[in-house]
Length: 69
Image (cartoon, rainbow, N blue to C red; front, side, top):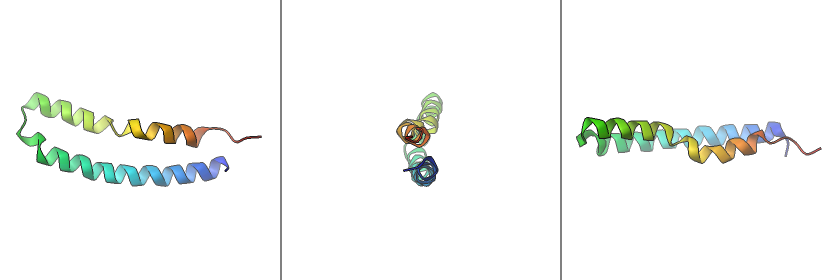
């Protein structure tokens, strides 16, 4: 598979994941975090805002690997 096809597939997969993750994060933030103390809320928002990167890193590595010659 060429790099252009990997990037296309990866981009579509990333967009789908981010849309579903954003909905999940909003549901968690609206449900339980609103009753927590301000410090806990801040930490939770930071974690929810950054944790989506972890599952996407293998996909980014796969997308960026060079073509076989």
